[in-house]
Image (spheres, rainbow, N blue to C red):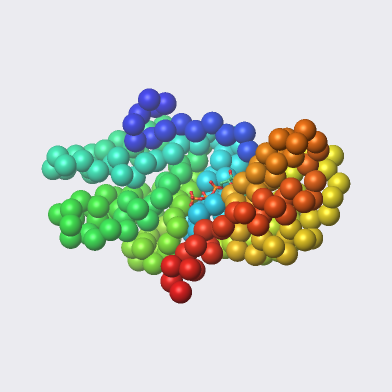
Length: 261
Ligand code: ATP
């Protein structure tokens, strides 16, 4: 299975402690994890189906997928939707069925459908209905699924997703991962600093005030840029390095806004 081109086995070293913010999502995931237990089954709870995570780039969707795999000790299989499609008649549906059985054979496991909006968000008429048929078989499987394959689908834009995907009975829940607020930015920045400079001791409030609109990925990038400044001067990282890094980094949200304005 590791060599399959459609399903890729992902290594993960991130745990849920590596995620800053996203409290509701983390609490929900903990609760769902318990539903895989024998006690929960005996109690009459169904095996969780999965979750859809929607949000802008760099807000921790992939990180969440990886951390669940690590925290739940279940293998993570990443499905590249684009590779399900073949130009041969009937072949895409066959690939989909095969991929599903491969995932089921690995259960309990996490099936991560990355960029599901790219795979199914296009114009259905342009491919002779193939993407619709592939989506339909995936959704039927999800609706009927009783195996311990927890599906995490990630997407950037909800408006590009077909309505069938959002209907009840497919995913247990849909979470919108927004750009982090100031409290979340503080915890994300602190996490990334502690990972690399465990004994840092400068205040973060000025930096937090200047990072409205920054994603988690951009905050991490600012930490690394700041460390480049201090390293090039052979000294410890200081508050001013991060302030400089933050002032030089233009977050994607700002670029996108400028394009609209
Ligand atoms: P994309 O839509 O581009 O795939 P994504 O939402 O999947 O983006 P990630 O790949 O999870 O974003 O984020 C990239 C990196 O940014 C993560 O590996 C992590 O280091 C950092 N990061 C993003 N969000 C958070 C967060 N909430 N807490 C801690 N780190 C974060």
